[in-house]
Length: 109
Length: 112
Image 1 (cartoon, rainbow over the protein chains, first blue to last red):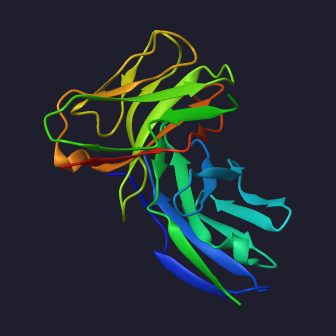
Image 2: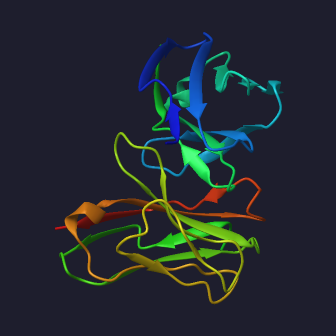
Image 3: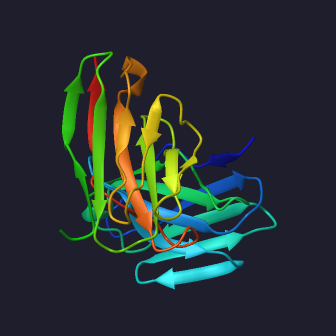
């Protein structure tokens, strides 16, 4: 079966750095997405990786290793507004998105 | 209208009733999707449409039906609601099936 694993919850301090990991086992691979979802709101697109390596976008970076079935989202200079759930999703061989359950990130002052 | 809208925002429904969740997008995206989101689970695809006039089944299609008569609208119908269909429903769209998906604000549905 297809499976996306990410930690259920993480806690970090305002101003610090946090890394959210995602491992996947899917039928084929056509890209990996990270979305942010604030409580009670819709998921919003953060990043997309299809080749190995690091993609940087401001305070957020995303890394992919296809051989290891692994990605991480790195958030720097954490702000209170970064408190949200972070969803990892993999596009499989049929171009359908397979979603992880999400990582709830709690930021403390 | 800007982006994707969904209606209603929330609904409480008696079991056995018929319900249609509405989704409209103004981005002229070809592909549209319906997901449900339940606590502790990832988003699960119910149905999708790669272009107007075509639909396909996702991971959890039973008890749901969709239609895509035009580019903008993609309604989701529950023919006879059951309590297990209590969930948050998100509609999404993308320019093509291989592009990034953008989500509507969601509909919170409770079936009693």
